Image (cartoon, rainbow, N blue to C red):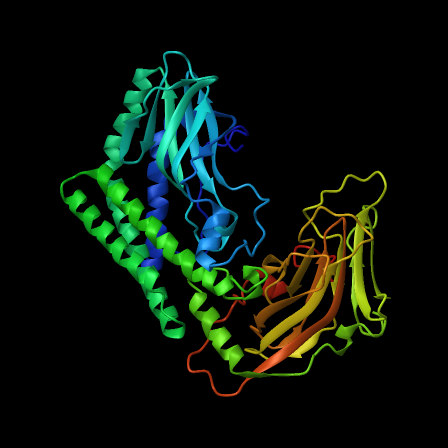
Length: 497
């Protein structure tokens, strides 16, 4: 889409200088440099290219499928995040430039926004339009490899073996352009191979350090240790290949090691989040590098006393106004929305939140919340560990296709880290852990997307007090200089109370 809009450049935005004496900064810098080598190879195809669309990729049965992979990792029978309805797997964009097509295929995975997943398919294929005289080559910064020519209805069938995160293909009958791409690869291959190997070493060291800390806090993962050893073996083979200037083999062995390292990261992460409604329910479970703090927090929680509910009106025995609850309809011209205390058939009182579009309004069901309810604010001290719990279920008054219409977030981490639990017809309990990054008022919001109806009961915020001083400190969950911290949750949405 950027190409079609006329963009012809790529920039990288950073918040601080990259100090290559620091291993993390060096890893970032090398990743940027390798990305630029990818772009240098395909630059002629991008200058005059136009995005023509996307083509479907088909993966073989022995490829890693997300749902089954999740079950294997967590030892359960179902995906805890209910992402099965969201498209995933490989997908390819086609960029045409004259008689040449550039195919860029990437592996999409909804959980990789938190921790890199496998993003691997043993065998994948696609069919792309091609002239009768055209041939196809797989390209990377270290090699150009021809595909076996397999005509298919609509063009050529390209089969990828070992599809790993990203791959590119050149389809053309212009041998001069092919030669130009091949020369660009030859010019950059020595540096690309060194970057692949250095990035793999840096990541292997980073993953090993994090795993060592986690293993000291929890039961060690023996399978993870075995994968670390195998990754080191791939790295050793990549080093040997580099010594003999076999740049293609360096990339191949480095990719195998990186795949094992991603598997290690996923194993450790799923063990941490398997009992959470979403990863954001723990402030330290949204990335691999913060998992040690997640386990420190969980160990501290298990050895703490729990205060009484700091929101006494969370049982909804009184109306919202007397309990200092603040409901807000975000756009009354678009939505019918309301929040009120109602009685169930058993006589139990609950909070009912419901929203639907006004007649004639075409409102997207998956974007901004239509209704917000601010809970009574409480005072906290920096470092306080807070447990937010409650019960939710789907209402019957508004039909919805949304499986997770409710958002729960707080003033400390803001709406960017909202928890969106799956809402069932029967009552279920959610649990969210937070740690105050500064002293002052702490607020919790409930937000509802449209159309939906959700019932809430027994909402509680409790302070957890350690029975003994923690043996190791927990790093702050958020940066105090972030926009959410500096301006409060809702800085970009003035409708928030």
